[in-house]
Length: 340
Image (cartoon, rainbow, N blue to C red):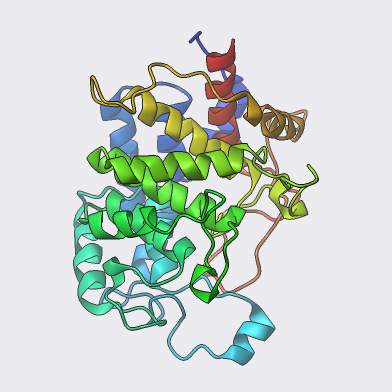
């Protein structure tokens, strides 16, 4: 693996003017800062910017908006009028993980304890950290729990046993679906990767991760297996926050993480892949991502999701996004170094 190309100084400066949630990842993933430096920046997430704002909106019982997946009292009519709301506990916890809230912080420990004690899923009244029935929800819950130090072994093994015949996952499996979806699969893959990073995984969870990755790779991260055409035009549009939706950047960032997991496999482990090169079937998605880079070296937000939010973190569709730019640069940095 060769040394990656440096990020232009003007782009780095612009990124470092952003939220602590962006800055710590820039320091770690683009500038190779020492661990104590990026960890110190990550600690600011609890007290500054987006992370602090979201924590300030937490209720005394540890929940957000009074519910697990939906705000308390949210109605079907409101869903039809507004779209999926993003203000309830599951989304807040997921956002805090994405932002990088230090799992050892007082705020994180309090949240884990209170959410575990008080949050129950709307679907079946299950305890929050047990998950519910939909794979995309459970994939995110698995990732969140692993980040915050919760024992998520049971949910990881359950997801490993719910692989569809074509290799991925679908939230409508319980309704009889036997075909995987891109959206469900990327959510579960991120959860299994988080479980593997936290615990080393098991033979079953590692096999499930590779199965889901093959589902995406066989489709180039965005194409129909039958025709080669885009499975959904939205998969080519960059969005943030990602919520439960797939796009090419989210998929590529997973494979960047997966490559690091493979390199870090325990000595002698049967699943170890020493310094693997990226799968060439990712090249088309990389080309799509590279083609979205603006002349100023930044990437713009291309899609906003409907629904209630506590506050905005982007400047609007068409405007440059620090989050997407950071994410795109670290993907290309990994790809270019690994394929040189």
